[in-house]
Image (tube, rainbow, N blue to C red; front, side, top):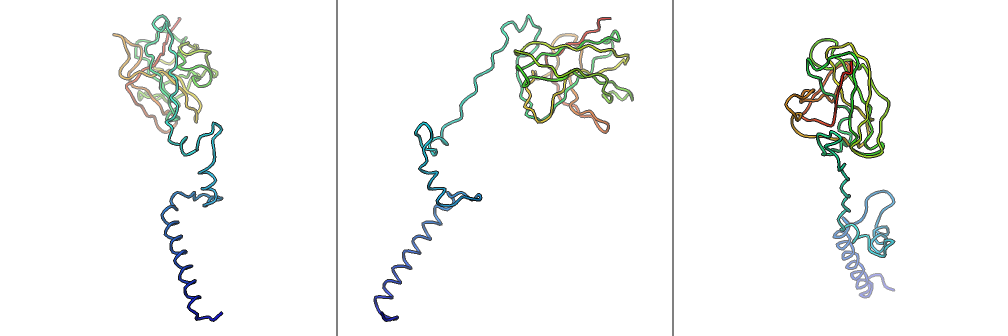
Length: 228
C-alpha cells in the first residue's frame, strides 16, 4: 500500500470524521456519567438499563415522589391528660436542651416534682428531666442541680415525672436529650397558655460555663409542683 495513496487518505478522513462525531456526542452526554471513583460510561449504561425488584427502571423510580409518612396518632383524651399542645416538633439535632425559669413566688418548697409529656414512644421521644439554679444572681441558669435517668414512654402523650430536693429560690426546669438524635418534642408557639402560668415564656437552650442562650417564646407539656 502506498503511503500517499488516495485510498489511505480516504480511510483516514473517514476515521477522523467518526472520531470527531464520537467526541461531540460524548461531550453532549458526559454530564450524565457518574464522576465518583469506579464510575464511567460502562457504569452509566449498566445503571440505565438496570431493573428495580418490581421490574421498573431506576430512572422512573427517581422521579417517583417520596412516600408521605402517616401522621402520628394523638391522644384522644389530650385534655384529660393535661396536654397544652399537640404540636409535635422534630428537633433534628438543632438543639438538645430546653429549660424554663419557674416564676418568682411559684416555688413554695424545697421538694420539686417535674412532669413532662413524651411526644413519641420509645427513644424517639425520650429525654432526661433536668434542673438548673442561678447561683450568680444574673437571672440565667448556671449550675445543674438535678437530672433524672433517661425516660421513655410506650405511647405519645404520657407524662414522666422526676422529684428532687432543692433549696435554691430561683430554678429552671425542663428536659435534655442526647445529641445527634432527631428527638421529637411537644412545642407550642407563643407564650404559656393560662392567666397565671408557672414559667417564663422564653426558654434556655444553651447552658454551660461560658454562656447561656435563650429563644422563644414557646411552651411544651411541662408541669411543676412543690409537694411540701
